[in-house]
Image (cartoon, rainbow, N blue to C red; front, side, top):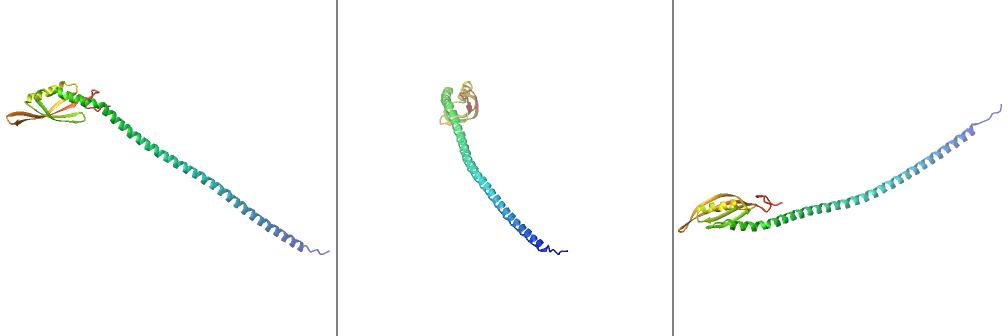
Length: 189
């Protein structure tokens, strides 16, 4: 029988397979590296695009925050101006009240009564003066009761004061002023 040696052929085949395997391994490594690098580039591109979008959103949010601050400032200014307008309107409506008050005070004073001080706090009046007698003070209080612009007279103090040979009565009376709207002591709307 002939002697055939197949070992060199197997050895060559084994080397060829090993070389092909190494080349395939090297090719797979290069391909894997290229795929990983490509994936990295794609991810960096996506992240860069999203970062740019986030920058645009931040800029828009800052612009909206500035607009909101401006709106809040305008609302505050509007509230202040409305409060001022309300005060001015109330003062305009109360302006004739002072004229009516002085006219009414002059009309309610009986003979022999002189006012030394009139103080007004809101709608409450503090009327101080000197009268020739306590009866004149009583007449003043009755006149206030019948008045259209003054109500609720209350005597606080009445003292006899000697002024040389004449005896006078110093008094303090409290009353309330009626506003044009007809409400006693209420500030106009």
